[in-house]
Image (tube, rainbow over all chains, first blue to last red; front, side, top):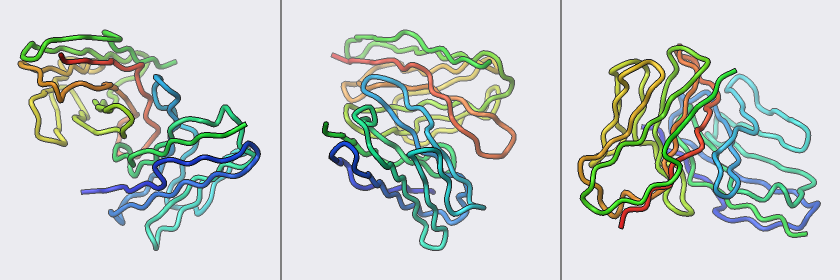
Length: 107
Length: 114
């Protein structure tokens, strides 16, 4: 079955810097790659997703890149703000999640 | 618009007691439904998913079970809870029909087994 690895597990950046979180997946048939943000004690919510027919997608300060050949995809957050602090999960297909990255943006 | 409900929000149960968590979805038909468990500071572990009434797939061997008695109702149960069952349980739904789509999560149930 599908397996998703996510790195790093924790990430601290200074406010205004960029943050990058990377995921790799095992099933080459996977074609949907969402990213979720989970604030403390709350439910995960989708922030961006990408399908296998595109290599990059951007939404304001957030972008996702996909390399299907290498089977990895990444989340890029630019100009980070304290409110970006949360746990971020990648997923392959719909329901196979990475282990999460705790992002801390230091003011 | 669609909404997803879960209850209870928090639950403290003794080891060996039964469990029933309920999830309902409004505003959509024939959704795919999911149960996840999230241990403290950990990722999301898929427990069960369902593509229709009475259709349940299990991802991990465990002492939990799931049922889908109605199209928009998903229930997570256990006959005898273990300490290791403690965690944050999340129900989620997404559109069915074969293509992949965003999942919408419920507010979660925080279960503590003592």
